[in-house]
Length: 372
Image 1 (cartoon, rainbow, N blue to C red):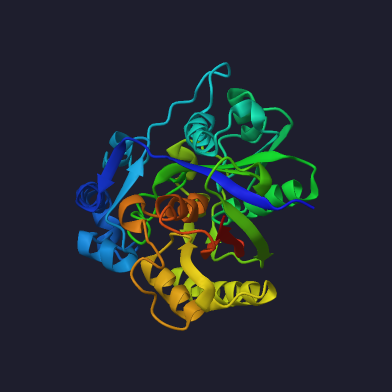
Image 2 (image 1 turned 120 degrees about the horizontal axis):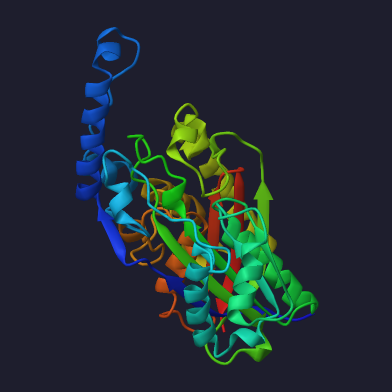
């Protein structure tokens, strides 16, 4: 058996951002247009008027201040309110593969590797651009990697589930070197016209290289344990499935885009995640006091604060539980990996931490790591 380790990581960040103020202006303009068009129905009590949003409401509800997106113009158009992502010809790289390639190249550079050194590619993300061929196989070709590749979808937990799958294969010897990549085009499945959720998501891609610790070319994090769990729930749901669709197809089906019962999610997921991490630590013989860092799924600041306090038994100190929500918003499976990538370089050999993601399913995955 071999000791798997994360030897490189990378983040692709889109060039366009949307601040809360910009988003609120667009949303409120949309609300005014809709209310004017439906004034008679509103007056008759058939439908309720859409209320305005505000930057203060968004920060209070989520901790989000801005988000990166692939297309700003389409999202901020009050008559549209969703990104303009043109379908690409079949002989050109897909949008997800292009994002993934950037993140993978950064991760490979850190690991001191090239694409040809990789013999497993897992594309783990919450929404995939197409059903088949697998996005991962396209990424494999763009990287010049060997071996095999496959897609995985466990919603916001996809990254940690992918890491477990790759680590298990490295540990067993069935692959020597893997890359797990998470291209998340969250803006394409968000309902930007819903005040309760219009601010939640952003776009990004992350990647981690996983190989035998003995092969590491420099700094690395040994993967000391992984644990995944699922429990079915409808409280976070997206029936659309794929990115290519028209607004006309969505008009009468609100559930075709992202939707959640936030109160139930908060009540049910937080105890599940907290207990999962605590149990995982115990199973590996770790104590909460051993942890130098918690890299949690970036869903909501209040949720993360709750989990950190439950796991540590106290309010986390500054820097112990980094949040990137304020800049990136919720980026689904990529969130915990962004936090890890941006806030891990300062750790010293022997320092321990946990990468944890959770979300629809319900699902939760945790990865215990130690700086090598």
